[in-house]
Length: 196
Image (cartoon, rainbow, N blue to C red; front, side, top):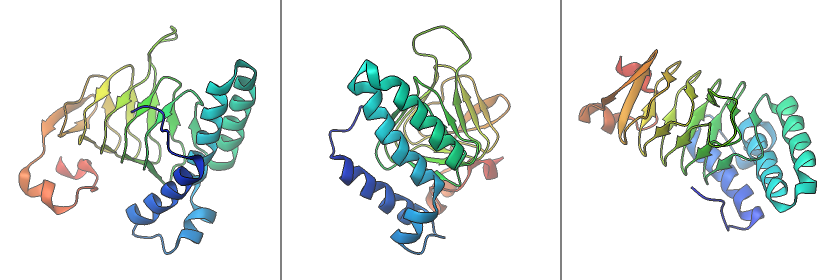
């Protein structure tokens, strides 16, 4: 879950291919490149994140770029947030990812998701999301909690405690529960809110 040493151009292409592979509605890479705000927000973030860490003089321009991407896409990602490879933000409107958030690889996140803080203190105050996690539409993951690898968060769930690896968290506040084996095999990217 660290900053990737992969060349910038390769990351951008990987973002395109990830969206094309994850979204059954995507018809071509050109369509994804031109019409997917989640991909545009990732591209803006990847540049702003590099600027954020390159020099103290580039922190303000990085923030301004992140705000321009927010205005253009409806997705707000702080330049300090660490995003893993092959993240797919589907639809994306209203997604907010805070400064100290860390997102693993192969994560799928739907519109209205918040990876937010519960404190105004400095230090780690946003969530850590493991690899291969699915976060449903409108879910709020708040504070320095950890969502373990292969977990699922249901639509509109409110997460304020850690979610163990491989479990499903639904409700307000969300309560983790194991995934039924029969359901796990059907559709790994189905929103876990259907398990209620």
